[in-house]
Image 1 (tube, rainbow, N blue to C red):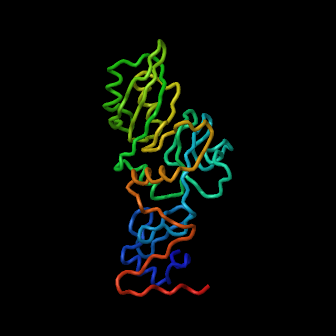
Image 2: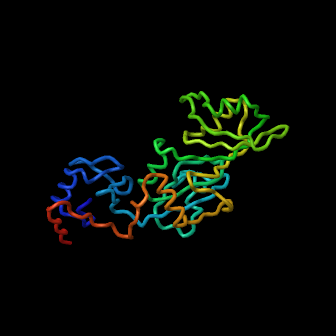
Image 3: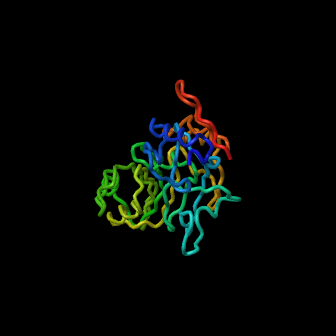
Length: 258
């Protein structure tokens, strides 16, 4: 596929692979390995090949919308909220149908992987309303970690926002993103979730974006999220794949004839 992209001859591509210059989904590629550009992130010297221009969209997911690229049941998906969508975008993490709030959509594969990897410690902040009056002991248990069937949750920051007779509102900040983790943890403490809204992902805040609306990230927001993921300065790309430069005294491989 490197040769097909016009970046090198087949021999040149093999030399790059032997030199460790080619990665597939962040792992150094090996000769004879197969990959699919529609599913895998293939990079030469850290530069993704065969990629569309990078896009970054902030979406306010409303209730009832599924956070998937497509839905076999024909339900509305998060992609339906992006006006005039032409590129293949993917959600960074998920929110279930009964939850709302911030979802980041992008076709930047390395960023997608980095934001979901726990080693980067990307915070996710939620506004949650639960049944019952949450006492201090329950808050401490939630902050320290709750034992679930798939293991104890990681420590989190919890703050009580408002407490009424039959419900409590909380701000919850965490770096984990297990399936329905917040609902399961609060349910285990005897406080089923009434409403859940993600209001922040790393440096990106939902702000005043209306429910169901979407907008591209500003240049400043792009820089902030790339910096948070450790990718600052590595995502400048035109709409065409860049030709990697030859290293040392080796000559650049000739472009295959068409």
